[in-house]
Length: 174
Image (tube, rainbow, N blue to C red; front, side, top):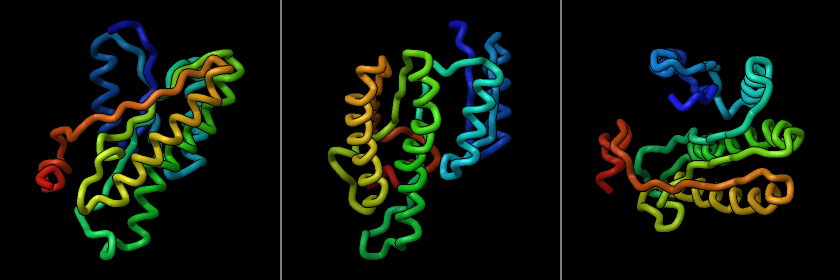
């Protein structure tokens, strides 16, 4: 509605289609690109498609995130730990590394990373999620310092629990 040209990325094509239809239905421009942020080639494809369609990237919002069902750390499988970090932290790393040169060349840009209040307070049974979000906060701080001289502004938002499907399945009851 404000005139932004929006690129959306998600693993689920159906979800992308619904959101793209909503954006274009309100007169917006939208490019949906199926992307899994745990796959570097897909992230690079996302950036290439964005540049091809719109010629620049002004804002990057890193909002991908996953968590495991509440599990004590001693019972958490290492593969699940790695999967959470691969999406929640390395997903930020991959997208930033792919977008940073574009923003640096443009002489400006904004990067917004989504973390969580649990990065600061923790939540029993969510060790991987809380740790990955805390690491995302620190990564944001470092990127903000590195980006400032390049006119790349990097910030992080840390919402509390939000009423989403995983929240209602018991995670929020903690």
